[in-house]
Length: 486
Image 1 (tube, one colour):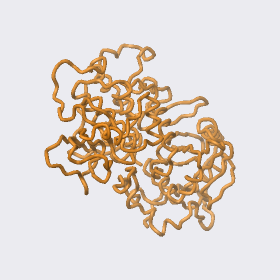
Image 2 (cartoon, rainbow, N blue to C red; image 1 turned 135 degrees about the vertical axis):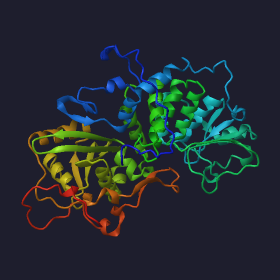
Image 3 (cartoon, one colour; image 1 turned 120 degrees about the vertical axis):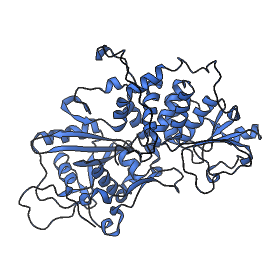
Image 4 (cartoon, rainbow, N blue to C red; image 1 turned 60 degrees about the vertical axis):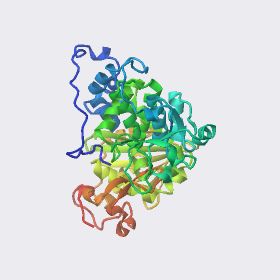
């Protein structure tokens, strides 16, 4: 998955905010934390890296890069807001039709629909509701920010059958809770395309639909345009929702507005470590693995580490999925391996690994998508390999920070280099043949899936991750980087 999204010429960009000069003469160690602790992210190892003990270096994640890049804008925006979440005395235009209404998201409710309902209710003056039971990721955010779970829409409408409703994060009747009467809908706030079964009303209603990565970005932006400061808990909920819907700003629907709002909301909510929050949220989400797509699993908690050894130079991506049911992940290995290859090619990585950790049994397995991964993992961990070389048993090694990266680092420091007679892996395909990521319109969870990849062809599905090459290779080659046409 590409870490950045190219913007079309006609896509409106946030206006640049002049950098503040007032604090430039303050020593770095005295500078307060801003925008998801951007100061804390300015670490010693380099402009785009993060350094750990033992000289282990990883690249900053996309969400860390974006928070740092937009720190000045976020700081200036936040400092211009009122110091609390009270309504300004000056009259501002807000649609009166949304005052005192119920804000409700879609069925199979997710974090964006719950956080959006909570944020909209705080902004416009109404009551948030849930269309169905909240998932584990949403419950994590509610608990983390100390927010009460919105009441079920059925309960609120039972108490007041004629209550007006504003739909958030959807506008199709097929996604609407059946307790809601179309005649009582007075507004829609959404970021999805208008497709079949879009709501039809007899009278004009308030509509706010923007092509952004998250509905919560719209709510956060509206707070700012009306010079309103969301409370810390509301800002935190909106922040978590944007991270969720944009796959930590890596998803194909991510816009500059999403990136800016993550920086702004991080500062308002006082987040100390934006990547830690994103990782904790992903771990909570992974409790419901059946609802997660392959791109979400491969990219959800992935970090990139840079190496410059005598025999190996390059970047290694290392993703981790923590679960109580590792079989649910391992049974999807045929789906995950091609996505790992696609991610490797799109991010220009030398290697990519995905560790599946059973947090109950404290046992893990490592997915190997190619011969280079197989060779490095064999030298580093030496675990039993099954499934035609695609799966290694790591035993009781369960920590990326303590068990995985330090071992790989030491192996590379000791002079490991790619063997000269490696087989041809799936990553032989050219990056242009990997298709693109799109939101699945038929998925109730709005998951992202890969469309049009050559790796999904019948010829490639039957190919092993490490096919051998006949004969010896006389000199070392970067075989995996040579594109072939299928």
